[in-house]
Image 1 (spheres, rainbow, N blue to C red):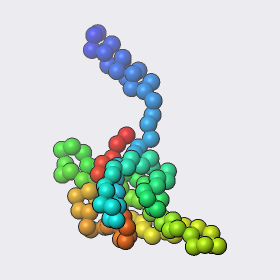
Image 2: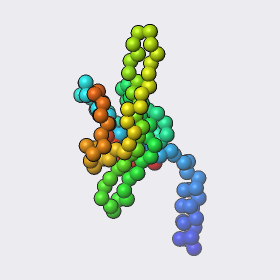
Image 3: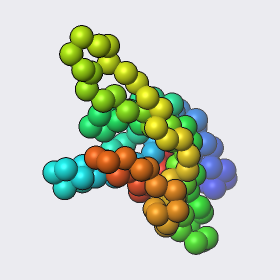
Image 4: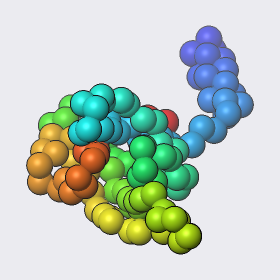
Length: 122
């Protein structure tokens, strides 16, 4: 009887908990200043990292009993400064997977910034 009540209470609490959007955590390195910062990206929303606009499309993390791995699929756009008299330009510069265990396998090739996968959070 007590087990049934505890299970029912746990189910009600889980059902009443607010749903949070999945998030991806990346680390961005500004190669000019040498400053690295962690950024929490909401899946599907753009986040600015310097002149870059990064959109995480999905984030996958292996189960704890498996080999640790975090995979984040991102689209990256650059917003370089506009020349005088011209409109600012948004250029797609990279789209692909970031792997936490092997950042050199699929790396963002940008002269001023490096970005790599850190974690997935709900």
